[in-house]
Each structure stands twice: as C-alpha cells, then as structure tokens.
Image 1: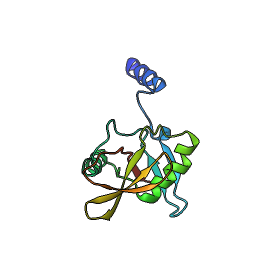
Image 2: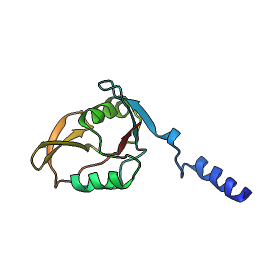
Image 3: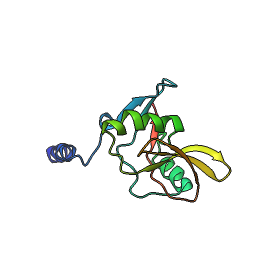
Image 4: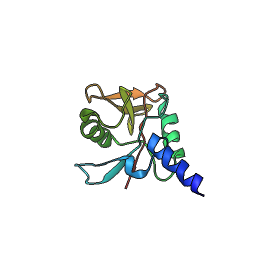
Amino acid sequence: MKRIVLLFVVLMMLGVLKTQAQLETITNPITGKKIQVAQNDFLNPMTWKQAKNACAELGNGWRLPTEDELLVMYSMLHKKGKGNFKGETYWSNYESSPGYRSTKRFEDSNALNKKETEVYYVRAVRTL
C-alpha cells in the first residue's frame, strides 16, 4: 500500500496525473457561469464532428466551448500566458450556417466561419 501511495505522489510531482484543482476554472463575465477548461488541447487538429465526438467521449459533461467561452479563454488565459494553448484556431460549438462552424483564431481573437470538414484545434470545457 505504501508503494502505491508513493508512486501516486511521485506521479503527481512529475505532472503525469492531473487533479481537478490543476485545471483552469474561469467565469464567463457575460453569463456568470463557471467553466472548467481542459489542461491541454487534443493532440491533433480535427474536423468539427471529430472534435464534438472527442469532447463527448471524455464524459462528465466535457464539450466544445461556445463562442463566448472561447473569447473568455482567449482573454483570461491565452493573453496572460496561461492554458498551454498551442493552436492558432479553435472550434466552437456554434453553427454559423449549414456546414459551417464558428472558430476563434488565438493569434488575434478574430471569429471565423470554417467548413466543418476542415481541421482545427480543440479544447474541451465543462460547466461547473
């Protein structure tokens, strides 16, 4: 039993295991809702449908962020050097027109409408 506890502590120190306390939690100033932001992007960019499914497969309420949530993530995390954002453009859950979804470009916070079949980065969120 002592070995298991020791292994757990070592893994935590090395950052291999993440606790909920280590995940970023931000408050949407528009809605007042708190959201938890996943520690990292998914490894590879993906289509919108793949992104939606990948977030849902995480379980426990994880999903694609709204347009407003992406803007809050950009301003409250990315611009302050937090959140480990590696991508330039991220999917939102908003359908801007049939076959197109809204994205947020993290270089300059511009919202762009992109075809669902194109590939972009994904960061999961969940409402607390």
